Length: 226
Image (cartoon, rainbow, N blue to C red):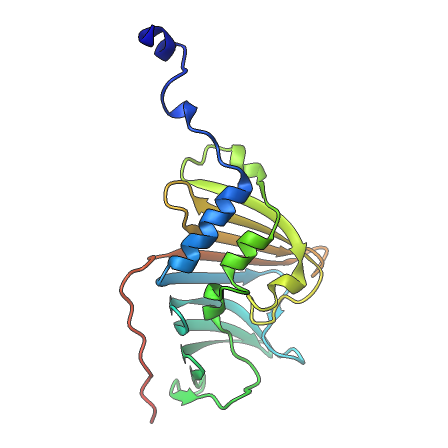
């Protein structure tokens, strides 16, 4: 009888129930909250996403490391007045440092500086990715039916205002489409794509966010100030 059942395909991995999208989101949110450190790459294309108001400086790319609860080190590529510059940033709680694009020397930012991109908000329990995952209604994306044995792909649509804290105020209005790739085995969020649907009908703002090096040892110290 056991051979007959197995031969009919009633045993084995096919019997593992597929979780609901909400269950995948809850697990991924809990995993993000438990993560101590990670490496990130953020790339923005299409309509510019500005860091300041009135808009003069747009974020194009950022890559670096975040350590819970409030430490970050990154290299940020910004576009301003037709010129693309690279700026180093280090955040240690309420202390922020940036490199001067003219001489690449580190400077401490004064309070209430005009712009600052804060990737540590990804970890924020109230506004970060955990909250986004657990407060949004998700479905499995169209690509979920494709042959992707590594990830669940969650799809949702929500008001852009919900992403304002998570994006340092760069997304504040309109509707956004969000897709999140979650590891099937470990529950880690490895990729997020955000499309600001109302930003531009022909070339909307597209965010691509990738995470890796979960819980790898990372030490972030204050930079040398001359």
